[in-house]
Image (cartoon, rainbow, N blue to C red; front, top):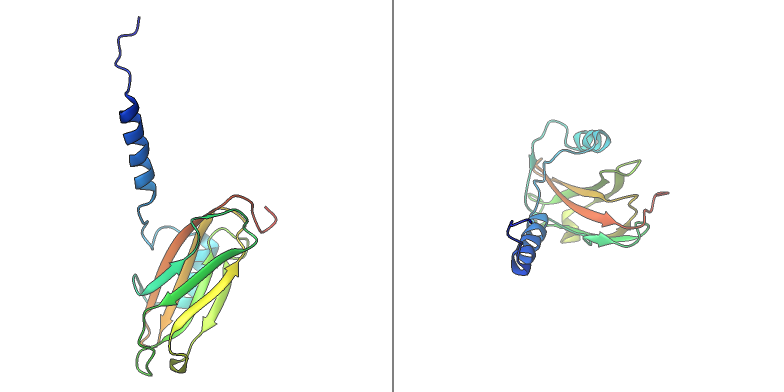
Length: 153
C-alpha cells in the first residue's frame, strides 16, 4: 500500500495558477529570433543598438485564424521636426518571409500609429521595430498563438 501523501485539490489549483501566471510574464524583447527575422532586423537597424520602450504592440494572444490577425502598433513620440518616428517595421518570426509591413511617418502626421491585419502561418512572435529621427531604434515583440495557420498551415 502506498502511504505517499496525496496532493490536495487546493494545492493542485495553486500549482496550475502559478504555471499560468509564469506563462504571462513578458519575455525579453531581445530573445533569440529566427535567422531570417534576425537578418531582416539587422538590415533595418544596421550597426545601431536596439532599445526597449516607447513602442506599444497590440495583438491578440490567441488568434483562431492566422489569415487575419488584427494588429495595432504605436510609438510614443512628440512628432516634432527634431524628435519623430521615421518608420515602423513589422516582422513575423516564423513566417516563410518575415517582413510583414513598413509604415513611414513624418512630423506632420501628428502621431505614429498604424492599424492593420496580418497573416501568420503558426504560433510565433510578432516583432515591431521603430526607427526614430535621432537614429535610435526601438524593438518590441509579442507572441500570438495561432490555432489555424494562415500561410498554408
